[in-house]
Every structure is written in C-alpha cells, then in structure tokens.
Length: 158
Image (cartoon, rainbow, N blue to C red):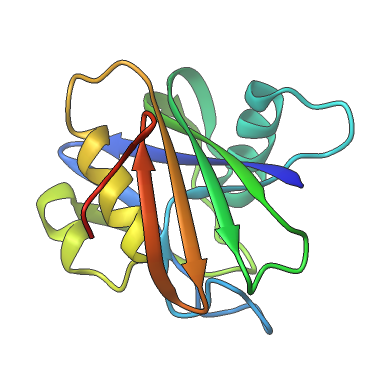
C-alpha cells in the first residue's frame, strides 16, 4: 500500500491539468491529471500536497480544501493499493515552471470531462464540483477498465 496526493488548482473557472506525455513507463501515460505525487517518509497528506505542488509547478499554496480519499485497486499497479488524498485550491501564487512528467495547461472546468481521463477520475471530478464536504471513493481497475466504483460505501452503477 502507498499514499499519494492529487490537487486541482482552480483559477478563473479553469483547472490546471497535467497531460502526462513526458515520462517513460508512466502508468498515467497520455492521461490528463491534476498535480500531485507519492508521499515521502514522515509526510502528512498536507506536507505531501505542499511539496508536490511546489515541485511540479513552482506555485505555493496558501489554503486548500481536503475533498476526499480515493482508494485505487488495480492489477496494473506494482505497489498495490493506493490511497490518494484529493485536494482543491484556489489560493496560490508564484511563477509557474514546467516539470518532467507532462505538459500543464489551464483547462476550462466544463471542458475537463472531454479530455483523455481515467474513468474513475470522471467520477471524482464530478463530486469536486458539488458542495459535498468530503467523500470516500473506491475505484477498482482490471487493466485500464474500471470494474467497480463505491462512493461512501454504496456501489455506483457504471
């Protein structure tokens, strides 16, 4: 098991999305994702969030909302089950810089669902746009196919 963070930075009705096209042997190759990464030893979700956003973008978060926990189960993941801590932020500053994982682009939030996303990402992105204060979502993949989604203990129809 391992833990990660993912943050959707929001500005002017847009999310900063990372198109994963640079890294070799990337599980997310070709997909559009938010900003984040794996925990380092001793980090809390907030520690990881702040470090990953700074490393991947050069931006400094001043406030954020902890939106949910996503449990990924996948036969493709060599590390086993992933616990992803999901955040949003619209309070940040700094000078953006690129990274070695992908190409970042500000994308209109309404256009995000039309991007090449993981099916499970479409589910949790929908909940980011609601007033649900916090949610738990379990996503089970076989290969690239989403075979089960459970929101707050209740199975969703796929």
